[in-house]
Length: 286
Image (cartoon, rainbow, N blue to C red; front, top):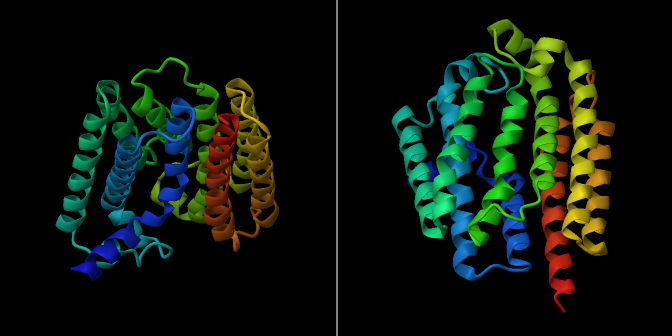
């Protein structure tokens, strides 16, 4: 049983929750002007874990026929038959239930917004079938993370720094374009849509750079709007280095180091921005 759970968690790359969770916590910490109460903290973590597990499980289910054909993804648990379809659906339903329960336990507005947030995360898995703007849809879905964390604490949208969500949108859409370059040829062959398959890898990389510049500008604006101190801008400097490094080590002709770009650097970015926000708020309160 434990082995099966481990396989399913690896199937959905559960450890990559690190991309979205820090931004949800960042929104919660900004709303609380510091560390939120333990109850809220736990429910926010459960909501994010539930939403991401539900979305990733759904993604694996609806893409299984493509995963079986694609040499890069043929060994994924569902495609390889290690995990059965009913098991994957059970995980998706259970994770969705956890998400809605957590939202209900937080406050009324969080519950009202929860179907919109979850629908966006599920919709992303279908967008590659009809639009090359799929990367923007994914960015929009994850942009709900800081907004959701903020609403979980405040119970209102008033005072939320929307530039933070815009930063998340451009950051996610940018790195998803780069990652999609791995499957550009396969997507084109199967009639799937993405920036690289529609406009080519070089153009996708150019747009990803532009999106990451916009993301950095939005993150900078967040610090200014919220009046965070120098600790936040130290985290922002780390973010700038990581964004630059991603585009330095990966290019349209050489995708061999994309795992470093996609997973390590982006994990550092989300953690750096969250931790620097926490330090800024904590030290400002003294």
